[in-house]
Amino acid sequence: MEELLPIVGRLVEKYTGFESTSVTYEKAEQLMEAVLYCIHEAEQSGQEALMTAQRLSAGQAYETGAAMVEQKVKEAVAMYNELLAEFHSYGCRNLYDTVVKGLPGFFQWYDIKFEPQNTIVTLDYPVMRDLSGYSGIDRIYEFIRCIRMEQEFMNRYDSDYVKSVLRKSHSRYEDMMDNICEIFFAAVIVHILAGRPFTEQKFSADDGRRIEEWLSQTEIQEMEKTLKNAVSFLVQEYYNGYDGLEAYLSGAVRDTIVRLKNASDHNILMKFL
Image 1 (tube, rainbow, N blue to C red):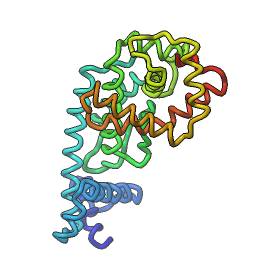
Image 2: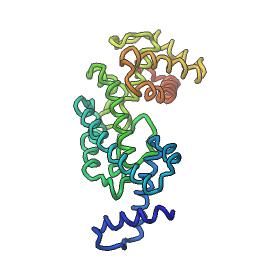
Image 3: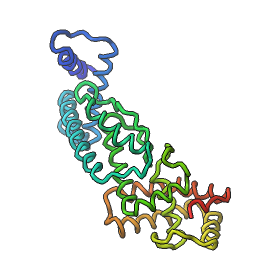
Image 4: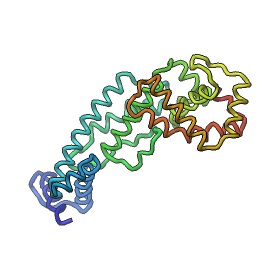
């Protein structure tokens, strides 16, 4: 703490334009959080061992982290621009509003120096990963990565087909707040379980019975193993091993199993067929 106070003091001077060394308690607390955020960024970016080995001071760790925050913003902007080039909301207003309308506000108002810990925007569209442990540029960066992987996954299919799957699940899917990739992923899993090519959109009653039987008679762990292997094959075969996609989709397997089992238990599995 003794090492941190001078860093906060210098930030106070910069914040007040070197006209004062006095700020409110709330502002001082915010600036302290900014310092800690940058130091944490250095630690989380693989620099912790280096910092320990070189016995970096808190000031040096802060400067290292602050530079990393700035670099991550540049990378996030580049990644966001790439995302927009082939972005499809598939008619989902929440997805469109969050990505196209909301994210630019973050880059416009994000304060790298005095409040890097502030995420600013609400990110109303839920991704298939828990990002609650992230804040500031870290959260935005991870959110964009998730959206890019979802777009990569869905954009390989005809957009009308994606929309038909979503509409079958929710008649007014355009207004829903759910993650549309998770819904579409469940439909892809059903294709895999039925052994049907993705070009075939019609399933037989026998397909439904076989899937229901598998869901009712197979242990969760075995189902997870089977479907994660299927996801691995899918990503390698059709997505050229797209970076991070296998882990991202595999992370949604258990929730997808629960979704399908619930649908089967309530005799509405045909919504996915």
